[in-house]
Length: 401
Image (cartoon, rainbow, N blue to C red; front, side):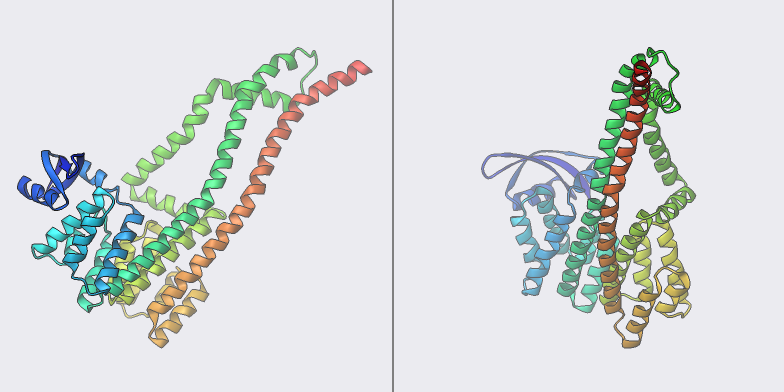
C-alpha cells in the first residue's frame, strides 16, 4: 500500500486535505468518492509523515470505534455494513479513512483481525490477538465489548495518574518560579543595602547572597542541567537496554510514587491477562502478549519468568508466587480461581483490587503533597526573610543601644 497526500472537494464545494493509503491513485479516487469527496490533486508521502498523521486517532476514538462495531455486530448487522455506517457517520477524517480502509481490506478477502492488524499505529498487537480469538470462538461482539470496557478502564486509570501528577507539577512550577524571581531579581537589589550596613553579615545572609549570585551568573545551567540530564537519560535508555532496565527498576523503587507506578502497571497487566484468557487465548500466548505490552522492563522480565515457569508445568498461582510479582492476597485469589475454574474472573478481581488501591494511593499522595509543598515554600521564604531581616534587626538594635 502507498501513502498519498490528497486535496479534494466535498459535495458542498469545500476543499478538504488529508492523507490516506491505497494501492494506486484510481483506488484512492474511488475510496474518496465513497465518502463524498472528489479528488483534485494527490502526491505520495513518506511513511514517517503518514504514520505521524495517523496517530491523531486517540484513545477516545478507539473506544468509539469499538462501541460502534460491538453494538452493530451484536444487533446482527454484517461487518461490512457496520464499517460502511461508521465511514459515513464518523465526524473526523482519520476515522472515516480508517473505517473505509478496513472495509476495503475485508471486501478484498481479509478477515477483520487481519484488516485491523494492517493499522499497527491504531490497534495494538494485543487488540488484534483478542479480535482474532473472538473470530475463532464466534464471540466477536462479546470480545469487542470486553475491549471497550478495558479501554475505558485504562483511560480512567491514565486520567487518575495524570490527575495525581498535575497538581504537584503545577505547585512545583510555581515554587520554582518564585525562587527564581527572588534569587535573580529581588535579592540582588538588597545585596548592596545589606553590605553597606557596616557590620559582618550572618552566615544565612552570606549563604543567601552566594546562592543569589550563583543563580544570576549560572541561571542557564540551573535551567538547562535538569533538561540536559533528562535528554541524556532518554537517549541512553533508547540505545542501551541496561540503562532502560536500571531506570525502570529505579522508578518502581521510588518512595511513595514507585509503589503507585507498580500498582498501575500490575492493574493493567491483570486486566489485559484476564481479558485475553477469557477470550479463549492460551495462558502462554496471553502472557506473551502481556510481556510485549508491558511498558516497564522490570515487570516485563517478571512476566517472562512467569511464562517460562507455567510452560514447565507450574500452576499460574505458584508461578506468580515464585516470581514475586503479586502480593500474597492476590496469589490466594488466583489459587481460588484455578480451583473453581474461573481464572479470568479472579484476574478481573485482581484488576479491581489494584484499581481501587491505585485510587486510594493517589488520594493519599495528593493529601500528602499539598502540605509538603506548602512547608517547602514556607521554609524557603522563611529562610530568605530571616537572612534579609536579621541583619536589619541587628543594626536597628545597635542604633537604639
